Image (cartoon, rainbow, N blue to C red; front, top):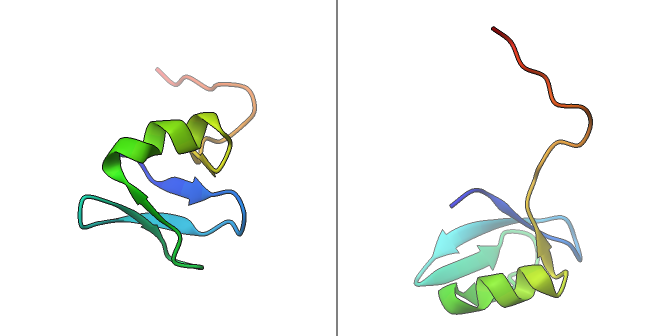
Length: 56
């Protein structure tokens, strides 16, 4: 699982006991709630925005 970010405070979510917990505020999500929280905008994925670069 890639790193998740808690949108409220920008804290990284760390894997813990069948779920993930925000390192900043302690917000906890069970493993089966992650998809729902992502779709409702509570967490996000740390993708870099901008044009894609490909090196060969």
